[in-house]
Length: 129
Image (tube, rainbow, N blue to C red; front, side, top):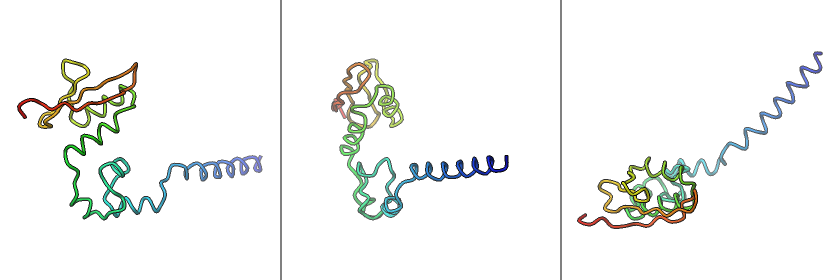
C-alpha cells in the first residue's frame, strides 16, 4: 500500500512539474517586457520590446496608429469577442448594429461580418469633428 501511495505521489509530482512549464513565458522575453515597459497584449502592436521604457514612452502611437492596432486585433475574431473588445476600449454600438462610435475619437468604426466572424472594420470620419 505504501508503495502505491509513493508511486502515485511521484507520478503527480512529475506531471505537475512538466505541465507548469507550458504556461510560463520565456525568461528572456519576460526581461524584454520589463525593460521595455510593454505588456504581452501591446508588445509588437503599439510597443516595441527592443526599445527601453523611456524610448517607448517618447514614441507614443498616434490615435490613428492606436485605431489601426485595434482594427488589426478585431478583424477575424468571433463577433462576441470582437464586440466585447470594442466595448472595453470605450466604443459604443449605435442604433445601427454594425456601427461603433467613441466619444472624442473623431471617427466611427463600420464592422462587416460573415456569419459569426468580423471580416472587415472600416474607419469612417465623423462629420464636424
